[in-house]
Image (cartoon, rainbow, N blue to C red; front, side):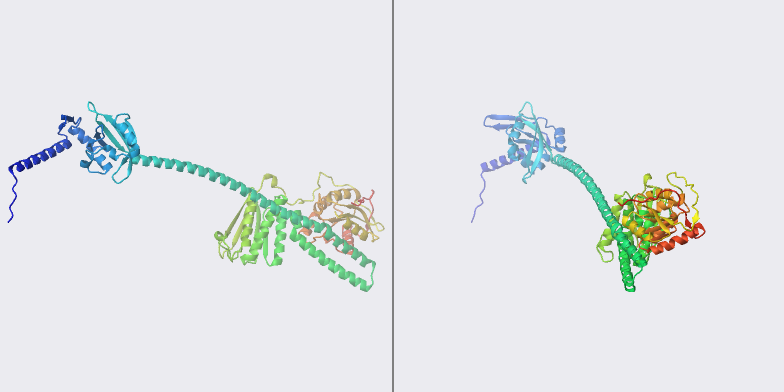
Length: 592
């Protein structure tokens, strides 16, 4: 049987005493926290010490507790005698566990020397790292002020996290601004460099295109000036041989040879036209485009060319580039538009030259021109790109409008400088040039026993010699002179007064069309017969417009030339009579 242990009387008194002390301590702690205590008397080994709580009045404590910054009072050894809830939250401890702790416990080890300087008033303000119980380092600013007469220190702790974040954000913004500025500068530099490169590429592309056209023109000129003239000379010589009389077998062989030479000459003409159409360089863009339209009919494409204004002219380079662009557009229409007709409109308005190429074919979506597909082959896309770059290099632009199943309209626009606007057709009237007055020589008398005076005009010596050798065989024809360009021909006519001028079209300095217009203006009674490797079409119309009686191919038999001379002279003079030689010496050109 157990017995209850009863505390002794002394033990009960001791328990009551401890309970009383605990209640007293709790009251003191509550009084300290509530501000009802201004000082504490603490018994120590050296006797009783008084600790004052300076400024611990109730309003002050309310202010400290409600402020947004941490606040604490620490002793010289770092003990936290007082702190507010904000500081306790920074540390991450309950308020009651923070009081009585040493502040050095919550300072980053690297910043302890700085903390000691604050406590001992060696510095008043410092930035350091406060350690949270989670291990996070919080940047704070501690502002310290000593308390008199005691050596305790009041410290205000400001959380710098937001400020540091703003500073970092500001630094980032500055770096971003600096980087953006640098990037913008780099982009501008690269853009300018790209634009310069693009301009150089455009200029090079245009020059390359022009170089190609110049080479084409050179090759065509070589064919015209050498091969074609040799073929013409062969035809003239064979014609002369046939006229002298041949055995039947030889006659057949000569005829066969003439046919072969004719085929070779026709083929040469075709190659020359494809390389560089003479009509373009001699008559300008408008006439060249009309000729191009006629040539496209051979491929099954009907081209209608409308020229609303021809009061302008262009340099040879620009003319060639525009012509080539229109030709590429027509070839694209032929290959892809699925339309058998195209309209080309050429006009000038408000200082710009405008060329429209329109078809009513299947059309396409211009937004997918850069894509590779079967409907719009890559070659045509490159051609359109080439045209656009070509027009940009010329200072103009290229517009393309197309709708599927509604056709396509391509527009070339080129500003015309004042120096570019002239008359495209250099010979439009029969007025004398260079202020020359019409000659007042009396008309030659008609005698049946005099010869027909003929002036040969051609820039190829071999052709002139061939024509002379054949014409000299006619008893009623006299070759009174030769000229190798239009200027010399005009002067020779004024001096020699021939009855007939056999005029080549393509010549340097002044072509046959211009020379014919001047001769007919001064001497309307003189008969001019045009000669050309390219007879018919534009050349024939231009020569007739200038006043020529007709245009014959150079390889035509001299008999044909002779047969053309006599009726025209008869019509011009009103009777079949020869012309009397006017006074003056014949002009003969020495062999070049």
